[in-house]
Length: 113
Image (tube, rainbow, N blue to C red):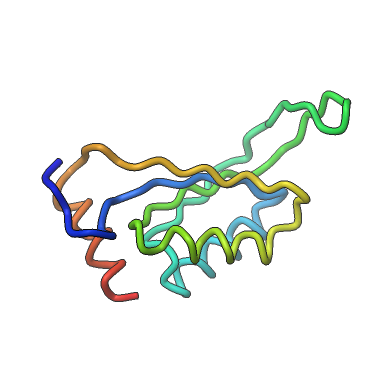
């Protein structure tokens, strides 16, 4: 991947929501607010985890997000303000490589924000 201007590194993020309607509402909202370039909703997925000493199994909907450095903070703040979980999932990782035209589209989307 070529060096990019400060703030225009491409990132992926992932979160889960309790149902399809909430996941879809969130996806539309973050794209509409220019907090991400793209949000993909998939599911349902079944998550297995420990919560307050109990083994849990929950059906959830996965939202995968594509964004730039400059959008990370706004996405985090928005998710914390609207997510129904006490401890919502939000993980992010920087994209090391990919189809250059797609990565440029994500960067161009961030510049329009």
